[in-house]
Length: 401
Ligand code: ADP
Image (cartoon, rainbow, N blue to C red; front, top):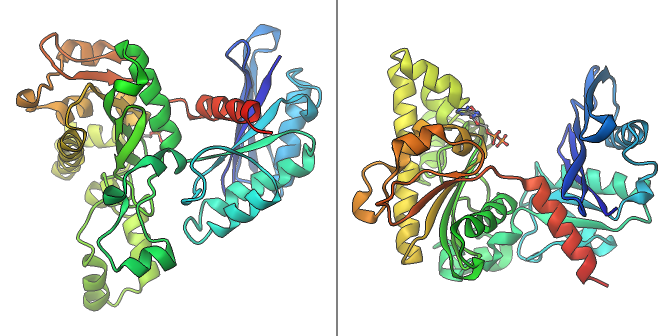
């Protein structure tokens, strides 16, 4: 059995999934959350066979080292794994790979150093990802470990699309450029979409919309990202739960002059108090629908702005691609919210985009929601970033060394 453990290590959590790659099955999944707090939370689920079941524990877990040790103990107790050394590999999600990492890489000391170099570009994420890597290297030193980067898929974007119109030295000296994120999700749904369309991946032209708490759009030609809406940081692009997305870059300077706020305050305002929350007070899309349905005009405005921004990106990426096979919706909102999908696709018949209201509301799992007249397919595809990380990890260990 080829077992791969996927680890997504955040600043106060470790999420994990254990795959049997031969059977294409999830054996176990779970998370340690609130690491370092008095009451940490440990959730573990074993899938399939006699071991199916969920366990929850509440007790203090001091740090990531203890968190991973407890995950190892739970995997042993539930009979899915006797030793971490039974793993064919561990795949780690790493948010920022900068320009250096264009694909997944087997982790060694020099890779750890490079991920550290990227900390200024992703000060919240990369240190947390590194903590997961460091404890996993200590606890499973013999097991090949692979880093899979959120940015890597977008390294194929051509230079005119990833450059900002800033002095050249800012790119050369400070690495200021578009990197893009959610790459694992965009890559996964793009491959699924090609399969659903029955076309070779190499000849499909797609717009993928990852709409979760964070949100981004990507233009994908022949399996390669050619543009994406998130930029040097995840703040740019679509309107998100709490992030503003595209705004006039002069607004922070104006705010600083007009209100006396300092830059850390403005940075927090744009990342945590803007987006849907900033407009209507709520950032959960289900709550926003409830409010809008009850007549809350701010919630309705937030919805209208959210969908309008997405539609604008569909138009821009359609032009960038030159032709379009499909628009793909994924992420918590993209997969579940028929009203948002309908509004994003409305009024684009002249572009060959024609949703079918019945298919849009009745679908489940992966499905198509375009009318028979539509020239562009409209697809809903549940993302599976963990499976994509497991596949890329497997590919990496088979093709390296
Ligand atoms: P994350 O980016 O944290 O992984 P998700 O992809 O889970 O987030 O997406 C979270 C968003 O999905 C929230 O705004 C939530 O309201 C929305 N969502 C989840 N289920 C539904 C649903 N049935 N209808 C509308 N929105 C939903």
